[in-house]
Amino acid sequence: MAQSVGYLSLTPSDAGSQGGEVDQRRIVFVIFEGFQPLDLFGPYEVFEHAHQHTGRYSCQVTAPRPGPVRSGSGLPVDVPYGVAELDPAGIDTLVVAGGGGVDQARHDRALTGWITDAGAGARRVASVCSGVFLLAAAGLLQGRRVTTHWAREQQLIREHPELVVDCDPIFFRDGRVWTSAGVTAGMDLALALVEDDVGREVAHAIAQEMVLFLRRPGNQSQFSVPLWSGQPSTDPIRAVVSAIHADPGARHGIADLASHAGLSPRHLQRRFTAELGIPPATYVEGVRIEAAKRALAESGHPVETIARRYGFGTAETLRRAFHRHLGIAPSDYRDRFRSTREYL
Image (tube, rainbow, N blue to C red; front, top):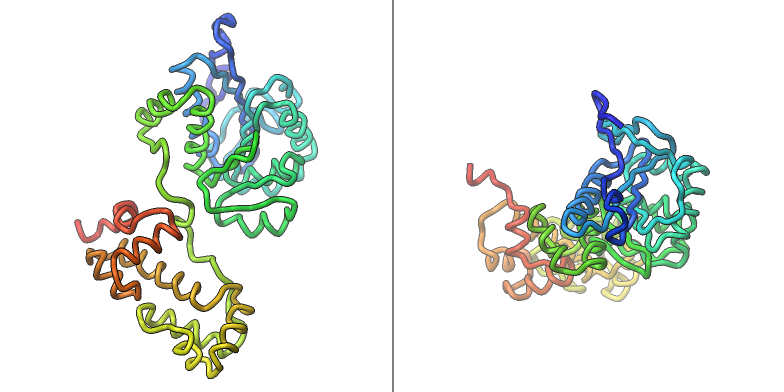
């Protein structure tokens, strides 16, 4: 199909034109109106690079109907095959994109039915970001441990109690099911799938060509906003929370916090945990980590100074806390997220 003016035309790669000389792996991507473009293009490019190295991959894209499919950002993609035209048999890897349109697409019975059939016969199934909702609607995730974008975690837990949801990993494998966090995490997932197929050497070469991490350091916590607790519902606990946020580096032992609430330490421990879902000490550490993250990103203060200012005492204590919560060292966090304003 010739490329059409105004939108991208996706035809199958020429991977299948080699006369059967190499065992081909058929990779099929599923998109829909309102999909996230990078959920498709990132993994697609990884597999196309892998094909250039190995000759082993054939990529196809499908959607509920053939023709232009508009992404969430407005970029239309010309899809040659709708699900009614694409044989679900013989698929090696089924990859489902995510995006805002998934909330409507998962109620498309023709689409989810095709995903059910294709996924049942595929060697493995994968989702990027909120594409996990389509896999769940297709009945392919029963009892599985999965991940998705951190912003969708609570929705997935609420709507699919049959799943074990863990939104810390960038991607996660449970048997033949692979799921990933959002947007660029689809490339991490695709690299892992390629490495699983043909080994680290090829995956490393692709990562070098595409300027990617073969193993991205850290986990989703380093990118997320602080959604790790509930909100206080009574004035005494609000007073405690306000005191912690007002000065994260102050003394916030249980006796100190109890004095803010006008409660006994034991009573505070019980009420705080009931209202916010976590104990006071855990909340204090979370607030201190958020404060340290901002300081690392927005200031040039040494790590030792930040550690003292925000209640960690030493740089080593801060380093351990960052590794425990974020999977990354404070210095690496600064390198990744610091503002460039001070250098302009």
